[in-house]
Length: 386
Figure 1: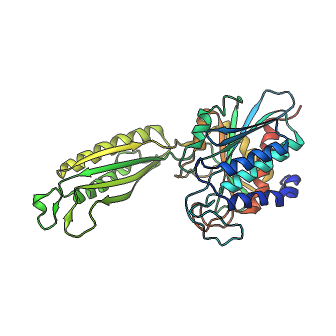
Figure 2: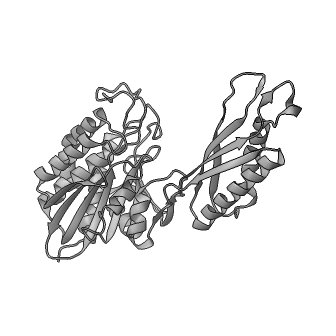
Figure 3: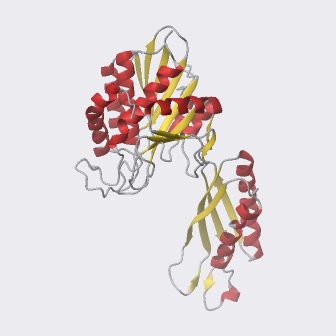
């Protein structure tokens, strides 16, 4: 693979950084050790500016070269997941209930590798802003960094990120213009009936029955209200009553779930129909439904021009680039940065490993030189020296 020679030389060193992050996973915004290590290394590399505490615990490093006023942002997420690791690796998590099951340790290490190379070579004309972000896994750290001025303070004009992709061979990349990943909304529905004895259901309002019909009715929204050429997922994932015995009709039932889509109009439609269908269905069975709908991460949408730049950089360092990979329904809070600035998000092959969020997952260290080379190649192409 045509990776940059410097990253082949640095491969062992970057791998050690990755393994250290893997052994010490941190959750959401509580990434103080990780952020501290990142900031220390950026200073060691000779970055022109290192600022901590952006977006609560994010770190921003700045590297300048030449005289151009062009500014490109590169982002990596730092946080782990609240789950136990079962890999048995000698560098497995030392923190019970936390593990790097999504490869953010690899993302952070690769951007650090790129930072060291860019600070050494300065083979570009402009400014590189390195965005090390906390709380991608449900905390919205990307939004916090944007709100805290990560784009405006350093005048970032374009922003790029990558994520490893299990099942795709190491050396390969995948990307597409337009929607890349879905939005992620959540809903809670409380169905209230009239509790009673299961032997005399006519004297109660059977909340379980009403809630069951709400579940069935909600599953008609995507198939009967959403344009069939548009993608959407509505999943009721939790059904819970306060009764755990066989002869009690519960007073309440709670439903929880998620909605995923790529289109703003579809998002609005599903929220509206979910509320109306839940309330009307519960009422039809003599119950009531209280709906709480929460909008989470927006869709991750790649700008066409910046996607092409990412494709060209990936083609220069990888073995294959799928430039029209199908969009997927998981969500990613890099979407907030892409709402603030044009940019692109690309997948990097992680080989034949368990999927992300699996307790046996591990980032493939063979991918490290590819990710580093992609970041560096992208900068040298977007900020060429005269």
